[in-house]
Image 1 (cartoon, rainbow, N blue to C red):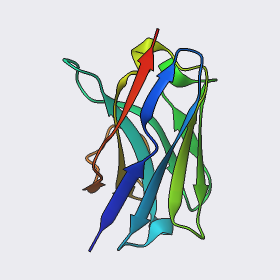
Image 2: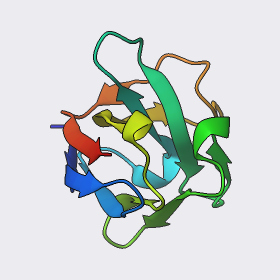
Image 3: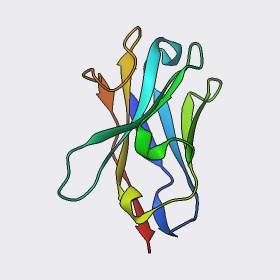
Length: 123
């Protein structure tokens, strides 16, 4: 079975850091792009960052550039999202998802989705 298991969310003060993990199983990890998305209360879901585990390409949405770093451990089939300098507006449920290469970015329908992990940033 395909599984994407997101974890690492929690409550943090503004300016703090969290690292989210997305553990993947049941599909060929190196043939997929793994993306992080988030949805804040009352807002639409938005793309945050994505990575191609085959060649390491990364992409960041403007609101998180310079603060978030995405990385991939192909031996563990896990993608990480290091989030630094967190702001209250980063508060959201964060989801990881996978889309088959060569698609890259947020403009495509992702094939697999994990459950969300809640990030709350207090001011």
